[in-house]
Image 1: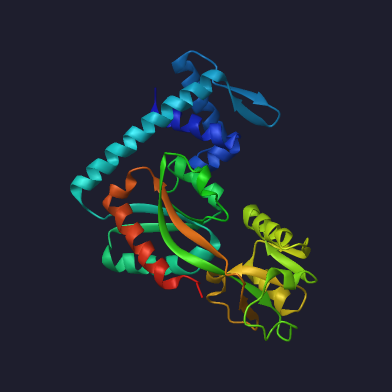
Image 2: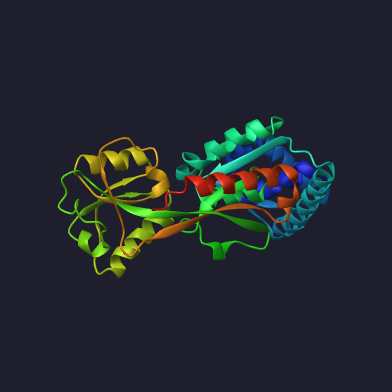
Length: 302
C-alpha cells in the first residue's frame, strides 16, 4: 500500500471532507478522491462512505487508519533516530501556537535560533490548541504551544510529550477612571455588576472565565465576544466592558488601560507539545530548549 494514500486516508478520518484534506495536503479534491479510490483498489474493500456533504470511514477504513497510525509512528521514530545519530540542527520545523504566545516569547526564540542554528528553518502558524494537536497527529506541525486552560492536559494521549515552558498570570482590564482603578488587587465578586468582553479564540478559555464568575456567585453579563486582542482592548478602553486576560497578551499593549491582578492570583501554565520521543531529534530539542528559555524570560507573571 502506498504511504501517501495511507496518509490521505488518515487525514480524511480527522478532517471528514475531501476539501479539508486537499487543503492540508496541498492537492486538489479530485486528487484526494483518486488517492482513496486507488487505496480501495489496493485493499479490495470499501474504505469510505458518503454521508451528506461529508465522508465517513467504514469499519475497514477505521481499522486501516489504526494500522497507518502505527506505521507512521515507526517511520517518525526512525527519522528521529537517524537525526539523533547525525546530531545536526537543520531542516524544516513547524510550530503551531496560540496568539498570546505567538506574539510574545516565540518571536524571540525564533530570532535566537536563527542566530544559533542558521540551517534550521522555522515556520510558525497561529492556531487554537485543538487544531494544533490535530495538525501534530498528522505530521503537519512539529511543536504545539498551548496552555492548560484552553487545552486540558488530561485529554492528551500517550502519543505526545509535554514540556513546561512558563507560568502566565491573569489580570483584570479596566477602563481609565473605573471605580476600582485604585484597588491593588481585584476579586471576581467585585465585578458582578460589570459588563464583560471575552476572548473567544478558545471556547475553553471563555468557559473557564464564565465558570469562575459563577463560582464567585454571579453570571457575567457579556456585551462583547472577540477572537482579537485589539477588539477586546478597544472595548475596555472605550468604557464598554471589562475583561480578564493573560499577561502575555498584554505584554506589548501601548494603549491606556488599568491592569490589576486577580485576588487570589490566577495563572495558566504554557507547555510545548511534541510527538512522543521526538525530543531526541536535535532540531526539536534545540527548539524546545530555546522556547523554555524565552518563555521563562517573557512570561506575563506578576
